[in-house]
Image 1 (cartoon, rainbow, N blue to C red):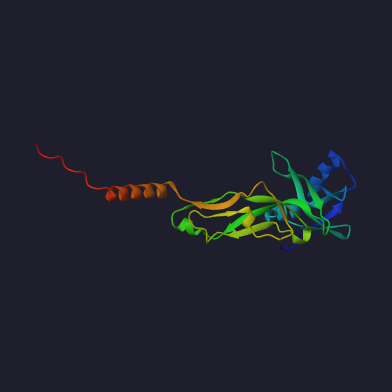
Image 2: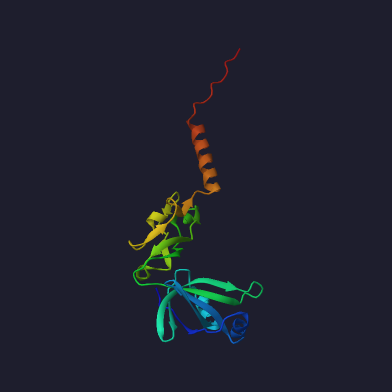
Length: 210
């Protein structure tokens, strides 16, 4: 994954009043959670919004610099004001090297399914999965090439490319993407079959003259 970083500063004042003043100054209150503790901090609103706009996901690891020390974190929760959409508060979760974390990884597709070009209906059914992974093996998105997917074909969770160390937490083996026959294709097949059956039937005998 691309290296992403942001700076934070320790926050000593708490409560609604100080938090309101921080937002006026362009800062967002934040908590850094990990190893059984939570540290109060703040980040520049424009900087965290820039990261969000860049497309960070639930499993995107961020290098957060605080008091001259860099911690690896991911965004655990973002709270916003319902009427304005402004960021109200943000929680970061600190990861520990070698220790597995539970997070959600996005699934994207690339290419155009072969079956789609032949008139089939392509469907992307599962867009994210929960996994347990160490920070070293974590990636925030899995991209699958669907260009070879023909009509009637499918890709299941068990076929997704991923590090061997991952624990994928799903029930069963759901279909991630598929290419199925459309109603038009099914109707055409029924018409062709009916026509073939009709041609294969023996001609009806004419009634004899009285």
